[in-house]
Image 1: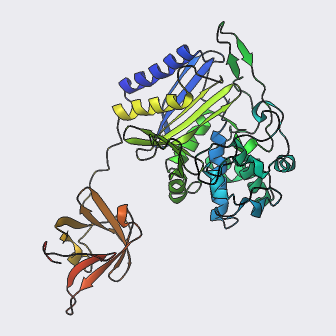
Image 2 (image 1 turned 90 degrees about the vertical axis):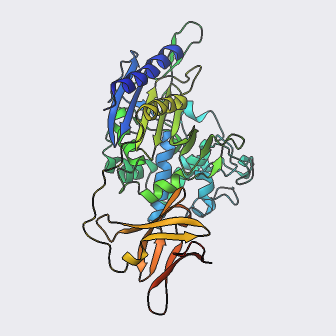
Length: 438
């Protein structure tokens, strides 16, 4: 539960946005530690609730990306596979799955034909038949260029690799394990109708709810605040069997910057990345005719926001800005949860670790080694100016770096002929007890 002042600030953002942008309804929830910490709503068309469905739009892409990475982990594909390996009839030479996931393929934004979001969709074979190399507007990694078509093709890859429809794979691998029973392919009552508001008289035009079919992996799904709380929890590491820490790190790693001049917005593998001051948020926005949605997460504090509106635009702002404003308000007033209390060690460091502890020097810089137990074999921590490096034991006198610039590097314990510890060699940088030793 958020503090009273924080709740009031979040409520103010939601109610002001709904009123000034004339949204029929707007709903938002703050998620902390995998649970709803605050829920708020505004508008009465219809009256929102945590179980009311809205359309997710492009948040669907994040789920499609998670599916592709899951198939990679299962050995069924590789992110560096050419698209033609799995969709051989598509004339997109050189394009790889990784390029499509990060919107770095140079592929144009939309498929051929009528606007896919507002018209009946086509089957996969027809979609593929319309894709030629003429759809490549830029070279690979030449620039960021958002592509809905890219995710339609990735959904086709999922279907061809598994021999099962994209929706069925998604349900089995992500939605069912997360208990997201109200996340569906078609709208299921109760759900909010989607509208476009007339700019002059405020009247509403209800928008069609078409089946996107082959383009469904780019934006088809419907969900609720309650269900999306579980997806936010997964994005903050609370469901590692569905989204492992390694996969989350990979998805949140920048692939390409959307604005190289400001570095405020980029894209990972199925995740949008936003900078707000010194914080970085990950997630995705979504829109389909009559609907807007956002999921935004601050991973370090395990804090997230999900918000929905049943309108196609929020004049003067945007659904992504709303999500980030709520996150800013929460983290400004209630920063990251307090660190766990320190607990004494159950006993002294192992005999081979004790000689490694204490003060070490490299090029006049002091570092201090300490031992931390976490219920396993323990971790060797080397703390220096501005950063701590953590190492796990790999064998006698051999440790592997886990964090910071030493991640992946090997720490080797150096001994003299008598067996005494005289140095720590980290990737040829030798740390000594004497600050002036060379």
